[in-house]
Length: 133
Image: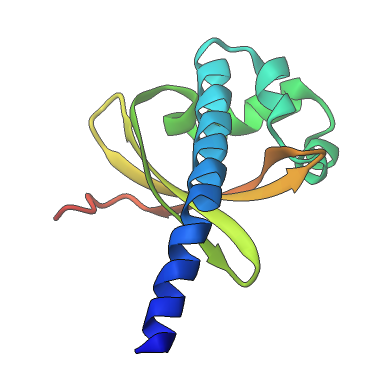
């Protein structure tokens, strides 16, 4: 019983920190998506981790990759944040995006903290099926 109470106390004490991380992560992903919607690839590029920035080199290259590989992120009809979880020491934010044709896409955003800010370190397209089905 003491262990259960200790676990509850610890989890309640950690909840505000996890909530703050989640809110910051969601805000960064949402801001990047807003930049894509405005075709502002320079701003969108600032939300990418240094590894992603090195990989694509320029905001223009990054924008072309998103337009071709992740059109639902470039022009979403709806964005909903699902769960934030830790997998093998990395934080992953699951996001449900509905595209302009009404198709639902589930994406996993890997997040890393650099210079006291959350950066997107990669995106995985998980599924094109409706998660409520």
